[in-house]
Image (cartoon, rainbow over all chains, first blue to last red; front, side, top):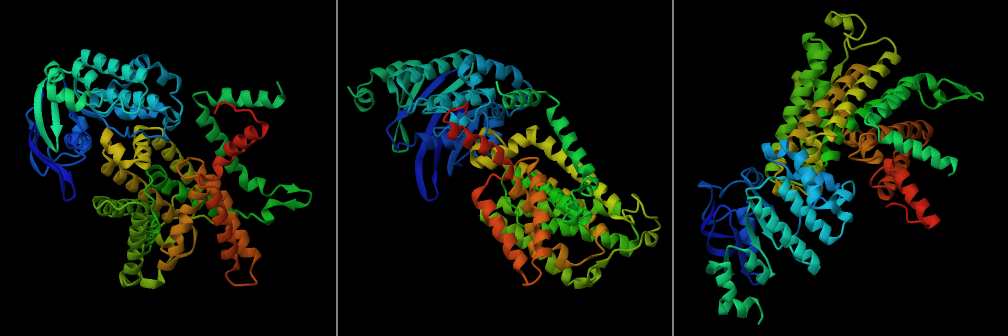
Length: 234
Length: 357
């Protein structure tokens, strides 16, 4: 479904990704783990078109998306939940959700999807006329997730969805990811909760210094000694 | 429950009605329609008309109109234009050039001006947005584009250079005084005509704000990068904003040229015109639909009163007017329309109850 072939990318003159190969198949949950500064967020941004690769290729369903602007990539069905949330804090919760619907079908289904999101996240319905910036961090994270789902993505990209959240909210985020996946949405996620993520993921990649250093099934990675030592802190 | 609460509840239930905006608009515009008569009512030997003439009211509505047009772009999308005189002047010049030199009806010329201004807006937008000009830099670029038109026209004898145009008589283009000729023999019809213009642009502004387009505009205003990463084609929508805004601003310029007797590059393209056109929106409340109208009723009469009251020292009126504006802009960046809400917040804080905030 999504394929990165020796992708190089970075900011200005500084190259961060030195040739990343990564693949996501339809229906999978794929995890990307690695230490801070390994290039995980840069990888996500490059896929979403916020950065463009300087070399290598990115294809989605066989078509190249290297040079497309972010808004066209969204229209192809790749929706991102960015690490910094990117909410419109001065706009209402409902308006934020409506902005998530961008493709033709998502726009025509937006009323039903809105109802569905309010069922999935009842807190958002209570606060629908409130400004997004006035909500707690956990609620904002839920809103970001819900906004992404309003776009009816085929591939949902999550960058640290549980960052800075209280443990029970982390649990909630993982529940949502599981539920979303059961509805047939493919997921690519970056997470710091390595153990939980690998247990959920079909496959995982380990990233170090801008390269993929290991790739295996989630359970295999969980049992790998170097992964245990580096990321599970045992 | 105090009677004040009853009123408040009554208003709240009215506010929730689906047709509330239409009813409010009808009341507001009804009031504006009655205004020329209201100012002549004699209260204890004084009438408002002494300070507020029909001419000032017309000027007030012209600037309410242009501020509303400016607001659709700059208030909604946050791309602050400081060069709307370009569009205003193009509207005025297209109308006059066609009616004076070719005896073409001013209504037609007005729409030609609107089209040319929209194209010029697209050019400005295309160049500025392509190269990611933002904030102050974008504002300065728009100002430069406005000055550019002024200099070009001053040096074009085909457009009468610095002398500008004298408005012709209706018979010069085979018309009689009346709506069709865009000329009247008294001020009152002019007042209702600009009121009609204001109504149209306000309805457009309201419709844009409550549509899909408005949602995109406000998302761009708040965080353009975030907007494009959720999928808003920001570049295209910023161009749409500037085109709509330029078109309507030009119609205002056309009206101006048919109301006053002359236009010159240093009147319709004046540096200060850029300020006058947008000021009511900034004072009233940028990004709101009523802000530009309320703002104009503060700014325009203020400016006229300052001009007629301080005739002794040259320029003193501008100083006083300027000081007044600085105070408003510093203490109320969200405009006059935010005052009731701020008042309520203050009241709640003084009373010590949290309210539903």
